[in-house]
Length: 199
Image (cartoon, rainbow, N blue to C red):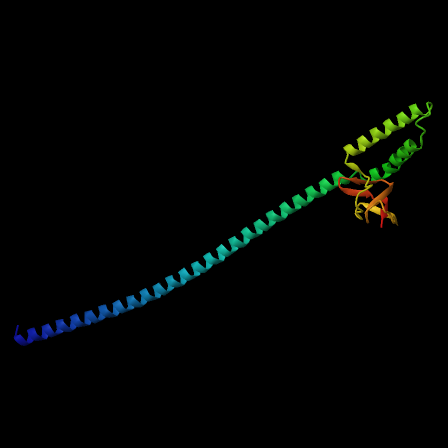
């Protein structure tokens, strides 16, 4: 081979090598483009997954709040039901107690009207007193309590003023005389005491 042919071969080889380098560079550039596209796809998927995670966390928090509210509502309903049952139990005898009050009043009037000195009346009076005591003990056991405010300050929640009179012996706004005793059932007034109040 001549020198010229060697030179030509070297030049051809060099051109082929340069061409291959250019192809490799082009392939590398295409791979970079693919990698960049894949990287963009991955970033997009990560963003989507993060958004989905945030949405799921918000939904879980909302459901936890709903559960807590429902639990609180059930607890409030249970408490209200217990209070209503307790009130019903306490005040179930309210109407019955109102009907018994005239009987108690009549027993007390009979005791006051009886002649305690008369030997014929004494056994009857003792029977009425015993009946009255037993009656009061029974109604007291069920929460009925007497309101007899003589000498106390007038309280419009417990007393009903039937008259107001001047009195030098009593301070103003004091109960001087009880015309009819009042009664309360477990703290609730069944009948206010009818009283005379001082000016």
